[in-house]
Image (cartoon, rainbow, N blue to C red):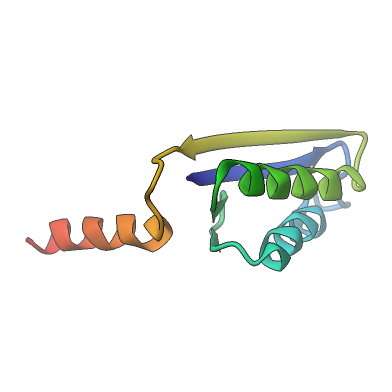
Length: 100
């Protein structure tokens, strides 16, 4: 499965309104998990089976919780049993379609 998620503290931003330190704590958890992942300006996407992916999302959310009294979590999942490597394969199929 692929899970794209965004997690940020509510009320725990810096003087400039940025939450980058809290988001960095979440991304660090994801990267240390060893699961395939990709981070862009809006979401981090992680690939694995249900239990391992959601364990990482939970740990990342808990890491952000240290930065404020509330945490906002937005999550989208693509559940395709038996498929792996979709983190890059989906994009490769899209690029091939654009070139056709």
